[in-house]
Length: 142
Image 1 (cartoon, helix red, strand yellow):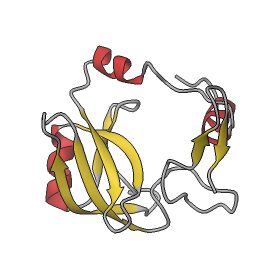
Image 2 (spheres, rainbow, N blue to C red):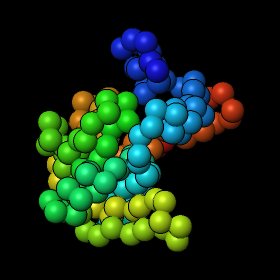
Image 3 (cartoon, one colour):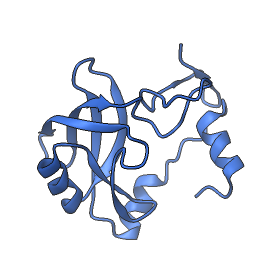
Protein backbone atom coordinates (compact mmCIF):
# COMPACT_ATOMS: atom_id res chain seq x y z
CA UNK A 1 0.00 0.00 0.00
CA UNK A 2 1.20 3.49 -0.73
CA UNK A 3 2.45 5.52 2.17
CA UNK A 4 2.03 9.12 1.07
CA UNK A 5 0.64 11.44 -1.58
CA UNK A 6 4.18 11.74 -2.98
CA UNK A 7 4.26 7.95 -3.41
CA UNK A 8 0.89 8.08 -5.20
CA UNK A 9 2.09 10.84 -7.50
CA UNK A 10 5.27 8.90 -8.33
CA UNK A 11 3.21 5.79 -9.04
CA UNK A 12 0.60 7.54 -11.20
CA UNK A 13 2.78 10.14 -12.92
CA UNK A 14 6.28 8.71 -12.74
CA UNK A 15 8.38 6.95 -15.32
CA UNK A 16 9.73 4.21 -13.05
CA UNK A 17 7.89 0.91 -13.41
CA UNK A 18 6.38 -0.31 -10.11
CA UNK A 19 4.06 -3.19 -11.07
CA UNK A 20 1.97 -4.49 -8.16
CA UNK A 21 2.29 -8.26 -8.47
CA UNK A 22 0.71 -8.71 -5.01
CA UNK A 23 -2.64 -7.00 -5.75
CA UNK A 24 -4.66 -10.11 -6.66
CA UNK A 25 -3.04 -12.12 -3.85
CA UNK A 26 -3.98 -9.38 -1.35
CA UNK A 27 -7.57 -9.28 -2.62
CA UNK A 28 -7.92 -13.03 -2.15
CA UNK A 29 -6.21 -13.01 1.23
CA UNK A 30 -8.50 -10.24 2.51
CA UNK A 31 -11.59 -12.28 1.67
CA UNK A 32 -13.07 -9.91 -0.92
CA UNK A 33 -15.59 -11.84 -3.03
CA UNK A 34 -15.01 -10.07 -6.33
CA UNK A 35 -14.30 -10.70 -10.00
CA UNK A 36 -12.35 -8.47 -12.38
CA UNK A 37 -14.14 -6.20 -14.83
CA UNK A 38 -12.57 -4.77 -17.97
CA UNK A 39 -14.19 -1.45 -18.89
CA UNK A 40 -14.07 -0.78 -22.62
CA UNK A 41 -15.29 2.15 -24.70
CA UNK A 42 -18.12 0.62 -26.76
CA UNK A 43 -17.49 2.91 -29.73
CA UNK A 44 -13.69 2.88 -30.03
CA UNK A 45 -12.78 -0.45 -28.41
CA UNK A 46 -10.27 1.33 -26.14
CA UNK A 47 -9.73 -0.38 -22.79
CA UNK A 48 -10.34 2.31 -20.16
CA UNK A 49 -9.33 0.43 -17.02
CA UNK A 50 -9.69 -2.81 -15.07
CA UNK A 51 -11.64 -2.85 -11.81
CA UNK A 52 -13.55 -5.31 -9.63
CA UNK A 53 -17.19 -5.97 -8.91
CA UNK A 54 -19.01 -7.85 -6.20
CA UNK A 55 -22.59 -9.12 -6.31
CA UNK A 56 -24.08 -5.85 -5.01
CA UNK A 57 -22.15 -3.61 -7.44
CA UNK A 58 -22.97 -5.94 -10.33
CA UNK A 59 -26.69 -5.83 -9.58
CA UNK A 60 -26.55 -2.02 -9.25
CA UNK A 61 -24.76 -1.77 -12.61
CA UNK A 62 -27.52 -3.74 -14.31
CA UNK A 63 -30.26 -1.77 -12.57
CA UNK A 64 -28.78 1.73 -13.07
CA UNK A 65 -27.25 1.00 -16.53
CA UNK A 66 -24.06 2.73 -15.43
CA UNK A 67 -20.76 1.37 -14.07
CA UNK A 68 -20.89 0.62 -10.36
CA UNK A 69 -17.79 -1.13 -9.05
CA UNK A 70 -16.23 -2.41 -5.86
CA UNK A 71 -13.15 -0.76 -4.38
CA UNK A 72 -10.97 -3.43 -2.79
CA UNK A 73 -8.74 -0.77 -1.19
CA UNK A 74 -11.66 1.11 0.41
CA UNK A 75 -13.81 -2.01 0.91
CA UNK A 76 -16.90 -0.35 -0.54
CA UNK A 77 -19.16 -0.15 -3.55
CA UNK A 78 -18.46 2.95 -5.65
CA UNK A 79 -20.49 4.46 -8.44
CA UNK A 80 -17.93 5.51 -11.05
CA UNK A 81 -18.21 9.26 -11.54
CA UNK A 82 -20.40 9.99 -8.51
CA UNK A 83 -18.00 12.71 -7.36
CA UNK A 84 -16.20 13.61 -10.62
CA UNK A 85 -19.20 13.54 -12.92
CA UNK A 86 -17.28 11.23 -15.27
CA UNK A 87 -19.83 8.41 -15.30
CA UNK A 88 -19.77 5.43 -17.64
CA UNK A 89 -23.12 4.53 -19.23
CA UNK A 90 -23.57 0.81 -19.76
CA UNK A 91 -24.04 -0.43 -23.33
CA UNK A 92 -23.79 -4.13 -22.50
CA UNK A 93 -22.13 -6.65 -20.22
CA UNK A 94 -20.26 -9.69 -21.47
CA UNK A 95 -19.01 -12.64 -19.46
CA UNK A 96 -15.97 -14.80 -20.23
CA UNK A 97 -16.14 -18.55 -20.86
CA UNK A 98 -15.30 -19.50 -17.25
CA UNK A 99 -17.65 -16.85 -15.80
CA UNK A 100 -14.86 -15.41 -13.66
CA UNK A 101 -14.48 -12.00 -15.33
CA UNK A 102 -16.71 -9.45 -17.02
CA UNK A 103 -16.45 -6.93 -19.84
CA UNK A 104 -18.47 -3.75 -19.44
CA UNK A 105 -18.86 -1.97 -22.75
CA UNK A 106 -19.55 1.63 -21.82
CA UNK A 107 -19.85 5.19 -23.11
CA UNK A 108 -18.08 7.99 -21.29
CA UNK A 109 -20.35 10.70 -19.93
CA UNK A 110 -18.02 13.51 -18.98
CA UNK A 111 -14.37 14.25 -19.42
CA UNK A 112 -12.81 10.84 -19.08
CA UNK A 113 -12.60 7.57 -17.22
CA UNK A 114 -9.39 7.73 -15.16
CA UNK A 115 -9.17 9.37 -11.73
CA UNK A 116 -5.91 11.07 -12.78
CA UNK A 117 -5.55 14.24 -14.82
CA UNK A 118 -3.20 15.12 -17.65
CA UNK A 119 -0.84 18.09 -17.73
CA UNK A 120 -3.71 20.36 -18.83
CA UNK A 121 -5.74 19.40 -15.72
CA UNK A 122 -8.50 17.48 -17.48
CA UNK A 123 -9.43 13.94 -16.59
CA UNK A 124 -7.60 11.37 -18.71
CA UNK A 125 -9.75 9.43 -21.18
CA UNK A 126 -8.50 6.08 -19.82
CA UNK A 127 -5.99 4.68 -17.36
CA UNK A 128 -3.52 3.22 -19.89
CA UNK A 129 -1.65 6.45 -20.63
CA UNK A 130 1.93 5.12 -20.30
CA UNK A 131 3.88 2.54 -22.27
CA UNK A 132 6.52 0.13 -20.99
CA UNK A 133 9.98 1.05 -22.29
CA UNK A 134 11.79 -1.79 -20.52
CA UNK A 135 11.56 -3.73 -17.25
CA UNK A 136 12.30 -0.58 -15.21
CA UNK A 137 11.03 2.37 -17.22
CA UNK A 138 7.76 3.87 -18.49
CA UNK A 139 7.05 6.62 -21.00
CA UNK A 140 3.93 8.67 -21.56
CA UNK A 141 2.00 7.47 -24.63
CA UNK A 142 1.54 9.91 -27.43
